[in-house]
Length: 197
Image (cartoon, rainbow, N blue to C red; front, side, top):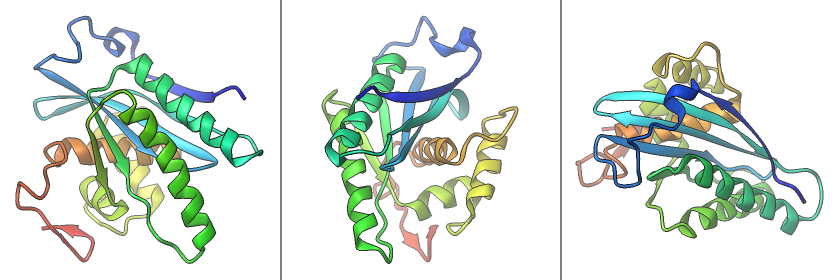
């Protein structure tokens, strides 16, 4: 089964800065992943000091079929994104438990496939809850998808709203950039009613 993913790219001039290597000190490239069995969103940005620069975003889509093949599409798709954009930090949204246990299980399997692609490349991985991501981007842990899309557009100065899945992935990357690269606990942050305090 062929991997299907669509990326929305930034200006080619800043897409692959020649000075950016996995060991560059000035810029940190972050890949955010919003896992899903049907659609897995991804978003890439560069953090330079306090400035965030959009690089690319898109979706890895799986067709209907056997679960194992769909998970392979996610694994291959995330691996392809990593190979193409060479991120240095990865942020993944944690699975939430919903009323349908079967849906939660499938989402966990999709998330596992994405994480396997990351750890297979020996990249550092940080995980954030949906509440943490929404709080970091929209200032409200219970923000609606449309609010997250709009805030991602504003924060990254995009000409239009990204797709919902790509926006969630970019929001995860933004949360990671604002959270000190996964060191919320070390910095003394904790969650209280869906807010970082």
